[in-house]
Length: 346
Image (cartoon, rainbow, N blue to C red; front, top):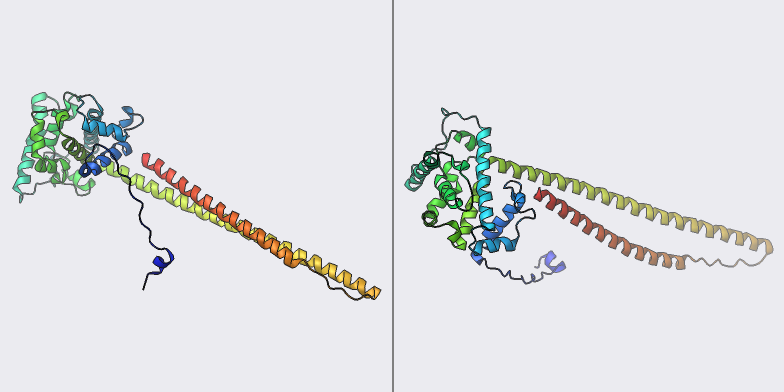
């Protein structure tokens, strides 16, 4: 037996999708869109508007990844993501009262020798900049000429356990452990890229390698507690906007029902007055006929014609009302989408 919904609403073919013609391979397109959306949605976090007030477009990021430009959009995006990570690290350190005697909860998983070795390399790399440059990695000048080495050292130091705020990170990052760092996983999965960065600049890498590096930096930013707070706050704001919109819609529907009920009552009152008027005229004519002795002529009421006219009026008003309701629904929908976009851009 066929489903009732299929009988009432027979299925229709989906519209044919329009292919997107670009220079990004199909297997990398999802990562490309993810990076593009991230830098625009979290533009305030990575301070994108200071460099690109109008944001980064599809064509700009596509050109940046495909072409090998030293001083271009790719260099700017890479520096913004790295600087965003360093800023989050400094903010996190300021929020934590470092306690060197605190119990460390970010111990490595000794059952996996590969992870254990990667963590040891990360511990050594985390002190490299301070030991040989006299500056922590966050303070090293960042430009098109140094970004490759800063990136390489940052990836090598990802997953280090030599931190005094491991317990705070574990509790405030949703049980975050050092082997959860996307940079640590990246080192284990893509050792060729790490090795290539020691002999070539990042601008000479292939499109796939560039996109993988941007993706891992985005993944690292998303692990920080302050970013999680931003996401949670925006979700709460979105819920509030939806509730306000729902209340607005209910109020609007209630007003429309009250208007329709008042209009219907007005029509009923008008019909009742018209009947009373016709009845009075009939009584007067009957009384006049009785006095003159003339036979009582039947009174032809124009109810039927009037009812037909009123029915026609009712039908036209119904159509107009339905059109008005459709327009109001569409306007409310557009208003909701607009508010949602504004909220997501905040």
